[in-house]
Length: 149
Image 1: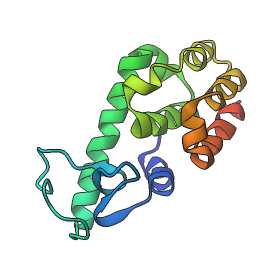
Image 2: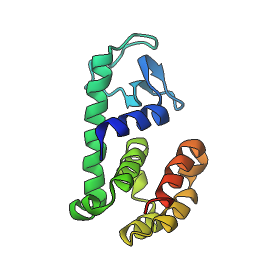
Image 3: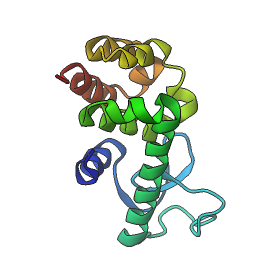
Image 4: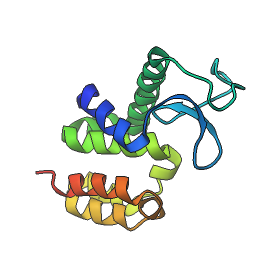
């Protein structure tokens, strides 16, 4: 899995803002979908407050590492590492978006992934509330998944 490619794709899917803003659920966010936590120096900053590119990249790297660790936790270290790079990247993208609690509920999709049945996994990914909520992003990911060779 290549970090630069993951960065470029998540930048498209999450957007990138160098200021504090409210996400679609009203949570303070900045950078590439970084949810401001109480432990962040930006906690309590008002919307519109600028955030440096260096800080955005630091949080993106940390958030990406968290998503990768969560993929290992959900799929198992060996199985996740054995997935093709493209599948790993798709799952990290989904984990970045949803977190492990929600991604773990994709029972049929995850079962198809374990069988390396990418077409079936994509079909099951499309049959979800997540797909209906973020249709453009989800379709890009599921199209890539079903085309893994």
